[in-house]
Image (cartoon, one colour):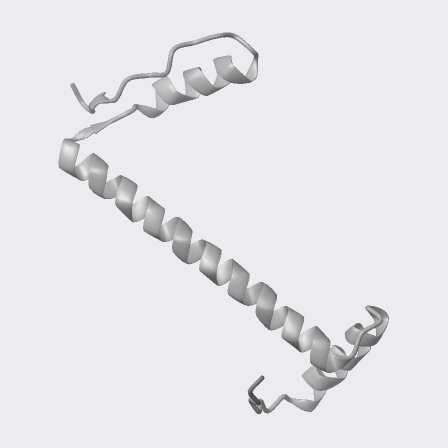
Length: 94
């Protein structure tokens, strides 16, 4: 394990100590968990952005997509338990 030094304002250090104590842990573990949680969120957002860019590129290349009104109707029917065929992608505006 490597060591990294961070400078914390006194008020933040005190808040960390207080919250860590309430969580029945120490400041080091609390900070480590906070960093781990933040990393997980950032990695998930990066993955989401990657998938979104890939899907947008597919739409841009094909020129086809499913209109929101069609998808909304499909989702509402599925949520109510009604069997319904998936909507077909088409050129929007046509």
